[in-house]
Length: 312
Image (cartoon, rainbow, N blue to C red; front, side, top):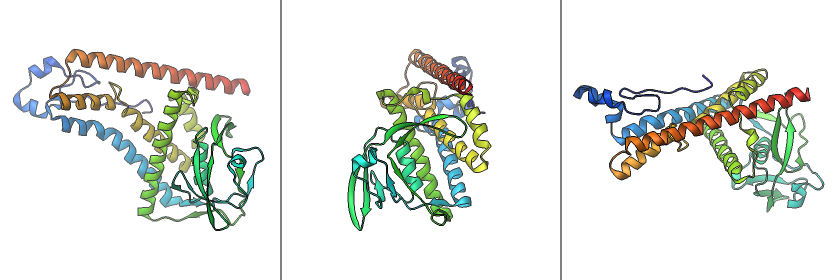
């Protein structure tokens, strides 16, 4: 279900896992041994964190399977041309430079470099390049550019101003084994987490526009568009959405899994849980935050659709 779901444990009053006082009072000793609220803090935390962990594991498995079936795209991260007046020119890039690392992260192909740069607009990146056998360190800040995909969706991406002119035999898919595919799956999942957190931090600091936040309407729209590109693209989107759901649920907002973990951490420190009143207030605040976020995301979706209709 795109909108998510929940688990109501034995002894809970509602979906927020608020204990049902009447039900707890009427429980037998045997029932208390099996009720969620009577478990240790560690056990409750393990149960709650299992959901987001499952989301991350699903993404890793999907990405790993895609790498195993289709291989890893490989194109030499070589700079063939530098656009005049671009961020790359200002940083000192030259044709023939071979990019080795970005911020200490190894770059194995040109798509690897594109992926990092496109999600780092306005951020200063440190490049290590091989220039005729000599290692050179360059600092560049990708410029923000609006780009339209073939479906007419507008994306804000970072650009350096360098290009690659691969020959027909230059780009190929490198076969990978199970262990390497698993490693690449973990790396790709972490990349999605890292860039998502970076974007959220950018929204909070004002560096990024919040209109990129989408809700169920945009998810449905993008899913349909991606499905037309084939199953690999659809599975890749599924993995990204799974990471996003897992990450969202870990935010320390009461009502979400992260909020429950916050309560359990407080309980572990205090030696006793927060009062029922304090937890209820927290859940109400959490519900308000989630509802406002959904309203804002839906508003963005409607504006996005209106802009597309106007453009067409």
